[in-house]
Image (cartoon, rainbow, N blue to C red; front, side, top):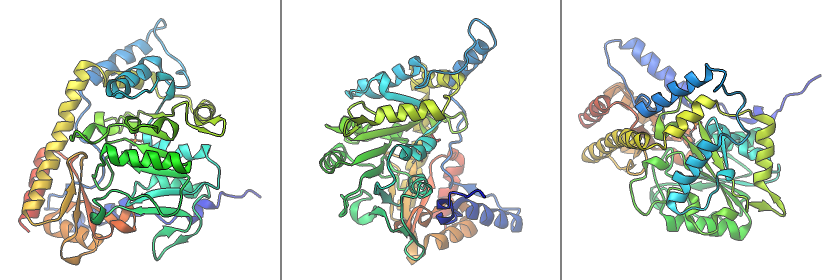
Length: 404
Ligand SMILES: *Cc1c(COP(=O)(O)O)cnc(C)c1O
């Protein structure tokens, strides 16, 4: 008789977006005349930039001719894309990352979920609270997190690092020593960022205690402040302790196209075993590469036209972020984020819980956001709005909230 991986049964139901969907659908059915504005889910809305569309068309045509047809991609990804990344995301910023340390994939969600496979079952993980749920849930599936306590909504073997107003939404070095530390800056869901000196502390700490940092840089393109690092490899010593994850979803609108990459420096070792070689083995065995067509589209992200067009796209969303941030401040809300990230994180007013505020906003303003409690216990009483809507909808949503 077969047996299942019963770690899956330990997962508490992730009802966040399905509960939101149900509540919104029920409200819409009862009030068909109301125009609901959705600033909840973290998905982009602007179409792909022209430079990317041109690259996609060109690559599709290549696939239609015997002379230029491409089959399986190289294991790590095409050289043209890995070189463009090494040059633009790293060398141009003074980071020493070689093209052969970059692994192309179909997105950062998969990579952030799969990367734990190359670590043993006994590693202790540390995560920010609130957190992007993938980091914890994939470690639950691997049996690494102990017992779930539904009262505190925490796992016995996970180290939680609260990120709340009191610490400016930046985690503090944990009391217990972790083996694997997940960090994501600029952050989803809080929209907060940390300065290079703060990240350097984490790198020094990881090197001191022998931990590895998994650094999710999915929102790097939204950084507007000078002191905020774009890559963990801007920090001294990061090559010996950090893995970095990138996505083309938020900077270039690839949420439906699918492309990302993971960087593992060759110095990153456990004894004399390099993590680079383990991930290369994993990649080669379980993955057959992002499509050629999509990797050409990724290359266009780094072309002069692509860069200029995407700068505008990011600016469009950040203009929304500014409007939300300033509008809510004027309306008396306590708000943060929205400067280096497309997320605005606000405190639910009047002692409301995050779900109470969700219902209030849906019913009174017909605006949908995301309750902070869905990202972890420290998210209770907080609420996330995204800047990924259209400008017109963002304007109207903020004006409705101001009018409450
Ligand atoms: C959106 C997002 C990603 C990107 O996921 P893709 O699979 O590349 O679309 C990764 N990490 C965080 C925290 C995100 O919010």
